[in-house]
Image (cartoon, rainbow, N blue to C red; front, top):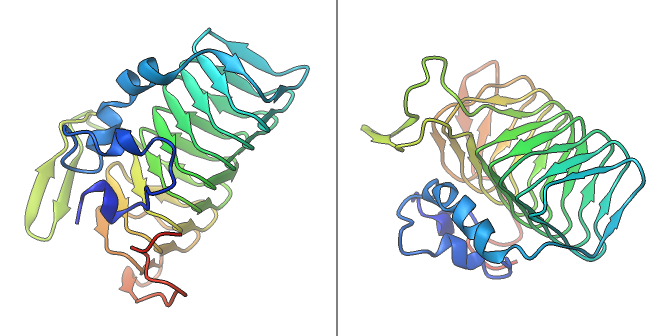
Amino acid sequence: MLAPEDFFDLSRYAHHELFRDRRVTYVWDVLKLLKEYLEHIIRPEIHGEVMPGAYIVGEQIFIGPGSVVEPGALIKGPAYIGRNTQVRHGAYVRERVLVGDNCVIGHATEIKDTILLDNAHAAHFAYLGDSIVGNHVNLGAGTRLANLKLDGSNVRIRINNEILDTGMRKLGAILGDRVQTGCNTVTNPGTLLGPDCRVYALTSPRGYYPPGSIIRPSSGIEVEVVRTERPSNLKE
């Protein structure tokens, strides 16, 4: 239940081979390979529009057709941005970022060492560090995916009665397809949200949540099966 396919439909994602690398056992292992993968695929090209007043720093940057980088945004390589993606005013795209198609990196949003699958939106005042954000995920304004424990030790994840050491000092969140977070959600390091989870505003999730969970701030964790037109494990 912790493999990439348990969180994401990869059938149409241009970079599915990264998730299917033989070195990937758990979904977070993909992040350990991100730097190597970007070095392999990036051929510096700008096919989209970089508007006057935007900043492009470094040579290892690819921006796909139809994508727009608005004035005041800053992108530092290595960074790969797919097709028809918006990098809005005031966005800060730091090193080692892989962004899919039709995504939004919004105003005052900072992103580093992170993967966005297609149609992922972080439109307002977000922080995404060392994280993977699935297809059609929407992050409410002020969502923070915290990636570093206060004591600086490795991030460990409790699954049932087992504790798994990720071997990573920095690990943010894994958000499965169609996850939604309310405004000012702050996930603790190593939070895993299965597909179709919903997080209410002002909530601070931690640990693993199965698909379809609803996480509320007042009553702890309430798990509910979310009815969808198709099961989350089918292709979109």
